Image 1: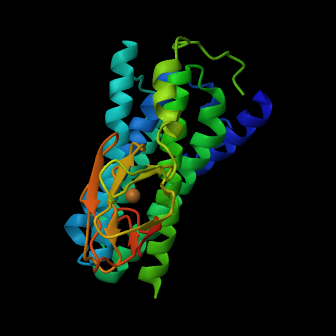
Image 2: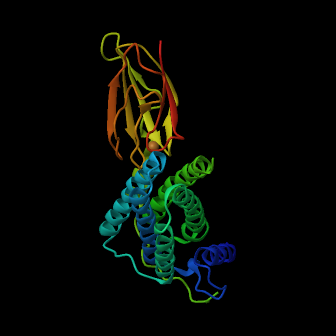
Image 3: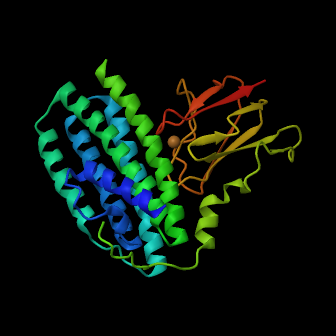
Length: 177
Length: 121
Ligand SMILES: [Cu+2]
């Protein structure tokens, strides 16, 4: 079990962060580090959404971006409430930092695009991003989370992000027409 | 792989919140309550990005209540935009009274893949 999930996690992490296989293993993160990665991942998608609201003039992109902000904010509120209840604080770690670095680059890149070019790039990135984060949550995080309440929250979060992945697929089709 | 073992930082009690998250079965499925004379009360639970039940048969004057068991906010909105519950947050419920001209097909404005049918017969 552990070997399989570590293997999957390493693969996912390598994809997400484009780093060599010698990188630290996402499956080694503890619950509070995992919570931090999820919080950062939520905030990154909220950032992308604000960028879309600022640049795109496509109403469907705006609706999608607002849903990303609404849902990821709701999940983060639940996560903070749970950590508060547990008297714990999320812990910064290598994966959170790498995600942020990659997001900074992507935001810079997308900020230069306009019109249909931006919409297409944003929708494709939303699809790829949710897919990658969902793989990470499903295969590396959920099997390794030890606290039952944290695990339950991640399972609920995964359902939301899978719905977003499906929604992003629809958006990609829409803006590619 | 690093070989260092994962630290247990949060092993502990659990049930309440997990139960709250998964306790979605608490709402009756298609529970119809005929408490007022003639008018029925229909309940729809929004859970795991689905309207449950997805289809209801109602009569003019009935009420329909949507309760959101998800963390994500949802809506129940007519496909033609003619009626709308507005935003229903986690744990909230919104009701409408069924009228003759209501369009039956509805969806969630925030998650358009979520669809339901409210037939007025
Ligand atoms: Cu919804």
